[in-house]
Image 1: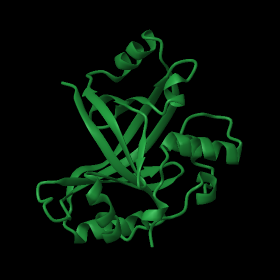
Image 2: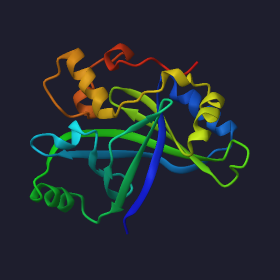
Image 3: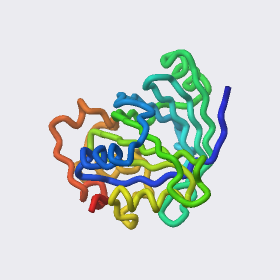
Length: 212
């Protein structure tokens, strides 16, 4: 069954992901998903219509296989907000062939290890709100994504010792494009194999570390 919701999240680049893990343990955060490798395929038309409009069409494989569509991003005080439609599929290769038969093509491949935790609401009246904290390890660096109600994001960011002003209003694809230009990369895939001999610094990504 397809699921439609509004995704509100904030993303930070961090230097010390182990320190974040320690803070989550001290907060007694629930482990929702252990460290899992993700393989993501991003689709677009040959004219790149979706990218030009800020929309995302993605096939992801981790502990499950999901096809996801996201509207163009709206920014709200540093956080990202957009409609998301997502549903499960049973076969990764068949889903890719299906998308290509519809006229879409793979324009970007990226890998990451993701660990997901959850916390109850941190603000008054938010007892039933679950905020998700994703620890993302990518070939070009480590990031934290916090997803939940907007009024939960800033308080939790402060508790985790993140500088809100360092929030990144850009996708991993956009960050790859920045690295690609900075390093004159000749490949399009954000995979651990491709980046194993590269040293990437925050300036290459156009970001600053958020961990204080």
